[in-house]
Image (tube, rainbow, N blue to C red; front, side, top):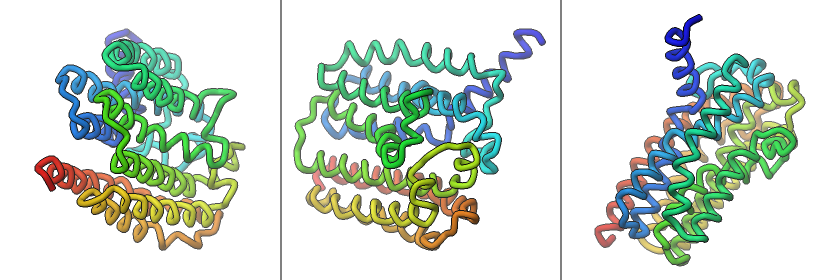
Length: 294
């Protein structure tokens, strides 16, 4: 097969592995946090947003697709918007592309920021790599899997704050803690639908440890905790706490889901993907309101 015939397919595989539907979940938190914290450099905003759009997601999901290949083959929900089954033919290319595409962005952001922002970025990248990389495999360590996964999405927001040198006010801290609980809840519920596939592949997770119903109930508690913590953010930021309610309502029907029917939770997961779009829109309106003086 010629290079010209292979290149389009390689591009499609890399694009699919980066989960385009999830790009906004990492780029938006960075850009919103940077702007709300008073970040003034247009170049830093553009470079950071571009990094957290594609290279960061390719690094995160590409490594996952390579080292989860065997379990992905057994996972019935793989092959669509929730993640492709990346053929082993593209594994080496994916790892090299993820690293090389990220490198210039990371170098620029480290040089543009402070020691604090550099440490935050390093932690975020360590979480991305450590989640799926061999031997470390934080995704196979119950509870740590949820915490690390949440860091993938909270990390860009905290980095945006650090890059803009935002002071750690109660509103800022409460917002990030609530976001972290939300991320943990989302990962726990997502893991519930994969209990059977993960156990067959010998992969551990918060859901394989607690069972499908245990993971769902943990997610409900964490979503509720996120909403309660947002009350500390003050008015009108506390209004964001209400946004956890649709997530709780969406997953409550699965609170007694037995392990052998774990795949049924996928209905809730698909709702989750759309809820994120609606929530992002509502958060944007709230941020605009706050920026105009609340």
